[in-house]
Amino acid sequence: MTQTGPRALSGSLEVYAKQDHVTDPGGLAALYDDLPAEPGALRDIVSGLIIHVSWAAQYGISPDTAMPRETQSVADRLQLIQKNCPGPLAAERPAERRTFGTCRDYSLLLCSMLRQRSVPARVRCGFATYFSAGPYQDHWIVEYWIGLEQRWVRADAQLDQLHRDRLDITFDCADMPTGTFLDGVRAWTLVRAGAAAPDQFGHGDSNGLWFLRVNLQRDLLALTNQPMSAWDSWRNATSPSKGLSDKGLASADQLARAVEAAEGAADGIAGLRELAAMGQTPPWQG
Image (cartoon, rainbow, N blue to C red; front, side, top):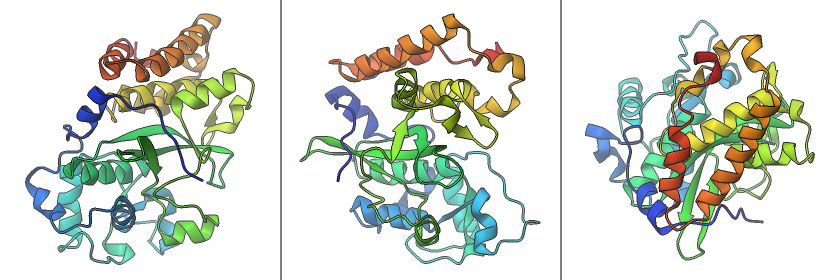
């Protein structure tokens, strides 16, 4: 089974085929020169360069090890990779010589490698269905465009062999089946239609409509090449700011519809940017 992504736009494809300020490899771009061209092979390489901080213990990493989880630019990530274990990116690295990060770091690095080959690629924020922590777990993945098939394909760069074994994952991690990952827009729409319970979506103890609203906005920002934003401060939100009024719900419904409409328009990226500009500041920072 294959994943058919949103309808592509010629203007958007050009934007997504170019590096942005986060995915640009900077002075270490030459590290990409000897990498394979096939997206699945690139995905495999990325999965061996980073360890997710929440999974570190399963790799035998001491809990006393410093493991920053702040998202880094790809240029900074590549510098750290070379500091920890100099050499070709495709070289196998022991767990203790990898860098630490989160799902977004894997996704940004794979996105960067694909864009360096002029393959349209973008990161998406949403919810995965294959982690044991809950039915729909906060997660980031990559979409890349296959021109011959005229479709977006989804890939999860975090899933190395240890992940696949522990989670019993048998699907193609470079061409994920429909429904294994819900982007923020789709997740919001699904819940508001009554097809899924809001408390099934979240991260740890944070879940529900409020968290769905966070990932709806983060997904929109990611679609406009803003994978890091003020909305990432959701852990700092206080309880009063986590409530959604009827007006807030209606506004989010309208936003989800507008994002879907923009992706189907002639110049969708312009519409997405306009929508993103109106929601840069989360309620708890307003």
